[in-house]
Image (cartoon, rainbow, N blue to C red; front, side, top):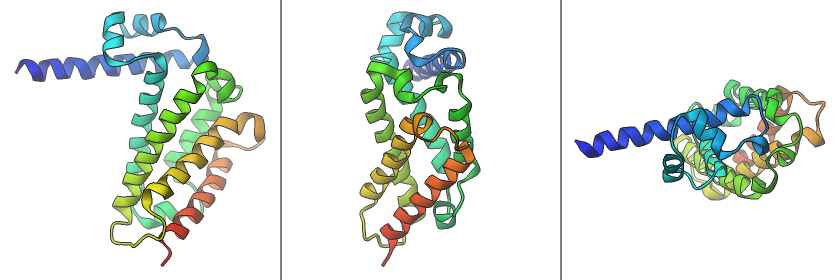
Amino acid sequence: MTNIKGKRQSERSRKQIKEALQKLLRSKSYGEISVGEIVEQADVGRSTFYRHFKSKADVMVDLHGDMFAKIFEELHSPEDWLAGHSAKIICKMFDTHLNSQATKTSIAGNIGADLDYIMRGVVSLLGKSIQTGLEKTFANTSSSVPFPVTASSIAGIYGMTFMTWKGTFPEISGEELADHVQRLIGAVIRESVAE
């Protein structure tokens, strides 16, 4: 019984910390936020923060994992993955990124020294979410390219697009960019599952 109560408290603390960072990101860039501000916003102690996360970069990575799980569980059929336009939830992700106060410049400019660590973590989680979705959706399909390779390639497309979007194609809307990326991803998946 004590373990269950402790686990629930642990999950609650992790959630509070992640929600605190999300809230702070609405008004500040990532680089302007300190661990002290996160623990104050989350109403937890510093020791609680460090029991669950090594750094604010780990919180940022974990936030993305939650988001990816929601996004890719909504893609159920081969048609969802291969559509010529992006799913509404992916368009929303692109639009949210475009309109975020914290991303008025490129992600690289906002994150600073944590960029490499966060990008590796985010792209890894993204790849795992995509792989799980592909394996579930195309379970009865033979693959000419292993799903881990396909998923990693798709994650790389997303990662580089988000990282460079603001500076490279600022005139493209979130929905337009999501649709361009979806067409690329559809081509990668079609090639992967081609017989």
